[in-house]
Length: 484
Image (cartoon, rainbow, N blue to C red):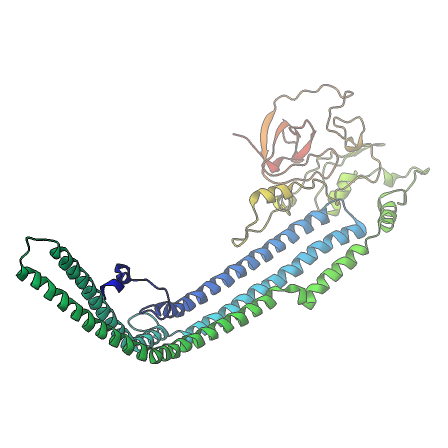
């Protein structure tokens, strides 16, 4: 009996099997994980909806800014319309992405929230009712088998201890036989102990085998009860998995704009608008409206007439058409003095012009939900410094603004034919508003630009100044302030 014993048999072998006592807790934990996964999916959809909203806002801002730039830029004709079609496409796509955001939040998000509320019921003491029911079911199914398993472990431990004691008694008896100093009485005691140890081994082994047999008999019922509770957990998890699959499919449908008819029409329309761009047509239009095709009042002989003596300069005609009071027109004899181009402007006109010039069409609307960087806005604002509505002289005049020998040429350089007239005092000033020169001898600047005032304000409210690039011209005096 002693020969069959092995010390290694007493070592506990750990197992990760579901059938081990307490290992059902992973199945129970899956129920709590299902509730947390619902929260994770809602957060995932919420973040995607926020991205859709920000993208829609960026598309709208981009379309608005570039539509203004293109309309005020030098591009014209059918190509301009084709270019603007991209902005129209962005506006329509922006609306679709806002609809996607609404579908994600109002349908998908709310659907998960409601399902989670119906599937998981919170308890007063914390946790969920479904988790507690699963925990109690597994504990009840495992309790009888766990009790018998505990008896088996105790019987095994007693049997192994008896085998160990038997081995030790036999070893002592063998050693005593070789010792001549040991009396027969002591030897008899050792032999009796060996005999008792063998009997203990037989008893513990029988008990161990009996308890193990009882455990084996209880195992089928144990497995059946555990399977039953496990299947209930499986059914609950199956509902969650099927629900998640259904929700994800709906999210996919909401995100997939390729199946939306209006989305396809947007790009079909965009393609048609681009294909309608016609270079020949645009060149023909430019020739007729800006080139040799324009009509011309060629100079012809005219008889003298008293009515012709009282004429207005091109500047005065333009201002008069705007309803601005013009003064300083004098007539003496046969000479007609050209009115000073700085004819007095009414205070009301200056005020209106100040308000209009202070408005910057390239300035973006403030949007707290937008993520467009300010650096990009600053780059876009400086894309084009040319406006198609910039006025050009269409009739010849000998006034100072059209004189090729005036103090400034097209590049802003001083005219070498002008007399050297140095101003009495130059003052640095800063622009309060944007101003776009209406004539060639007027300066154009933006609010915040600095320039040099060369002459004081005249009686019509105009000053002569010089930009930092050297260009000299006139500007409204009330559009600037001295730099302190």
